[in-house]
Image (cartoon, rainbow, N blue to C red):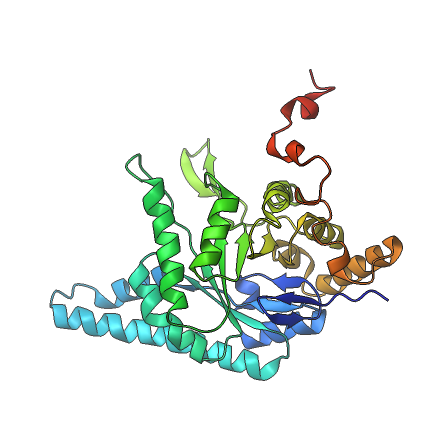
Length: 324
């Protein structure tokens, strides 16, 4: 019988299926549904600094006095934090699986001021959803990397719970960044964040949102970086993006992921799809003679390959054979 248990950031999970931060994990009741369907852990919907700031802007209206603005800012921020910590309290009282809080902020001071409150609310771990977009040519790569590292260092100085950092894929060296984040105090790194998708309506000549959901093909990029990053750092890796089936989860585990985050497929197939995915992983393990996930994690990574140099090329020639 396959044993699907894994250790993620020191937390015991019954299986590697983690429901990622989304509208599916906004309330304690939704977290209960995730557990009932077979989730190994849940990442709560992110607390957004910009969302709270939008409330502040709405409430402040035409306020011009500094004291009034400061009062509104403090009131709205406290309300947002208190509402979030309430969800953490309720979720922890309702389920036995790990509950991971998530914060999405764009200013370092905001992270520093509020992470302790979230940790004290009882979250088992904290996922930092850091997403800086270099919009102009003046953006300096070193400055962006420095923001990531200093943010993690600041958060680590304020909390004792495990930290995961969710990053995007647009960096010069993913393995180097992952290792630096580990030394800064993160236990895990999530590959990768899914940014807001942009599209264009050519009839109305307007910008519009693209699909918010991932597709299975999105997994390819994650697999590439999992395979080359696994084993090169002490940081654990979580796969995110394009994981829609148990087979997709197995691929990520073979590439080196400790856990696999799922979201879009649950929007499409409901929470009960977690049960299907869990059973598919167990069935695959039974067919291939594996009793634990540790026996095959990273089996197809560069570290365990007999031809590691093959992972360092884009392999475009091989990919184009038959497509001249």
